[in-house]
Image 1: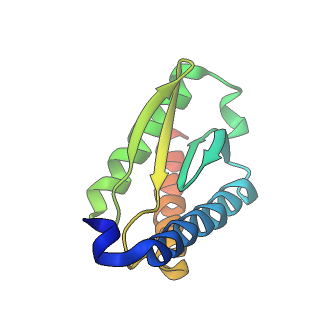
Image 2: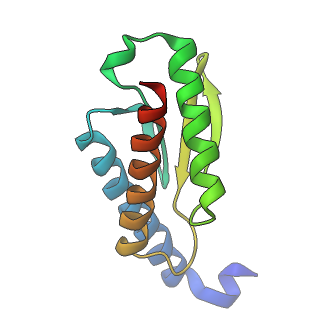
Length: 125
């Protein structure tokens, strides 16, 4: 049905656009030293976590911090993310996939995530 409705060319364009947007998000995450990419990006999915050096890799504290961040981000209603556990590490999942998503939406989502990180880190100190 999707192929009939959009056609192969438009579906390819959409997938390539989502991947490109996810690459851009991944670069934003990499530039903020409070965050880390946990597993390599796959297609339009970026798996990352907040892991400030101040916590010195205390895994329970890092997990709790990320749980708080995810809860805060989702509570804003401005974007929705999910989590997973990979190799015993609690991670945040950012997926690009909506049809009308543009660079500005990804940048706005990153700003929400950064704002949440600022707030949860203040609460921790």
